[in-house]
Image (cartoon, rainbow, N blue to C red; front, side, top):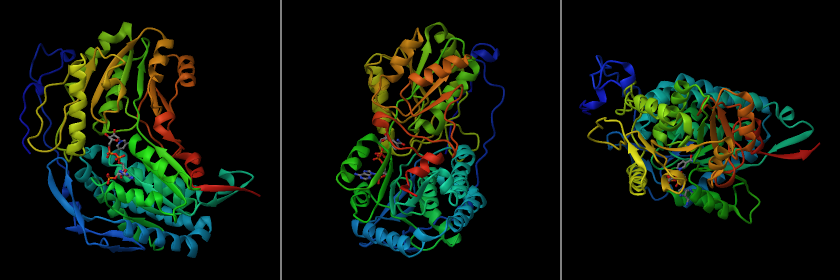
Length: 502
Ligand code: NDP
């Protein structure tokens, strides 16, 4: 991959080197070694503890979005395969897992957590190759957090009586789980860890563009001697996900993805007695008051929207800035954008990697074009993108009106829309002026203002003087079109149990 350097290497004005001076140094390439991953040519489905081909032997190809090279062929599951997987999960639930004491289930979860840590580098490299996210994020965020979820829920497995005092917590049965492509392994952990801790068995469908870490996780299940059928993984297109949702042998459905598919899934379980949690899209407001420490806020804003190429449901995609500090903040942001390194996700210095798929890149490109057409002012730092792969420049829009599509629709890309406000009331009104309600951020020195804002904002998570912080002990989820139910923490366990009276 060749990256030619141009104005990207000009020093930001704040560095005081003189107008347009070249940065006097550059990072040497620091590519992570991909040899640690032993890719197979073809991956099967993981059903009943065994790797099996799809019922009609069909496969699809998963590609590296940073190079557009094929990585492997993956079984294209069918409704019949989904049926096989649900039966395997039912059998495992009825035979053994559902009645296993919590302390025994905990041992398996601890084992899985430990194996994920032992194989963390392998998982990080594979995640980056299949998804396009920078290695420093898969290495330092995705994989450690995935392991942390298993550690955390392992701790709850034998303490359900304490989690729900005075009640008896019973597993629901078979959980059907559908996950997206933006945090493939982490979303798997968010779904599987609490389900197993509570005594359920699982059938999981990964996203079609990022199946590989889920299939490597199948190997972890074998290594941990997890009883066969407790975890089943069926890869395949969206319709196969719907056959999981509708399957009568499924007791609980958990979905993370777009609001559009979330609606279809809600319709798919309607009329059944299946439990449902939906974690959908977002259009978070990140609010900066005039007393905020601006340099710290700039780091939070950058982390809020350019982390994981902005392909984050809780991304801080709408920046609301108090009018009196707009100009200094925008100047600092532009300076900071000039230092963001876009390129090879496997290079340890890369900040923004590849967009996950051509379709997603096209969606981002179209929405950005709409922003320009509707009259917002676009700023993109001068940086050359690799010749191949799905890359998009970090983008900043000013002069954005609330009616613009870029202020209303989830872009799911590295695109920030800046709006302004004068009073806290106006900030709250604008922040809540969205059909979504997943997350928000507040930057101010006043603790009382933080608490007042948190109360008034309709968002499941509000970060104060930080953004995009995750912890397995902390519940996460949305209001309105961002879905319902919570994942993480004790609340996340609640979604996988039936509570009976003692
Ligand atoms: P989807 O919601 O389509 O995909 C999420 C998961 O649902 C994938 O596993 C997908 O499978 C599966 N799926 C697709 N169709 C169905 C169906 N009819 N029934 C059951 N499962 C289904 O997201 P997209 O990949 O299409 O992304 C579109 C937009 O959604 C993004 O631009 C972004 O705005 C938003 N999004 C939000 C996410 C979030 O975390 N909130 C995550 C991902 C996307 P398959 O991959 O095989 O299609």
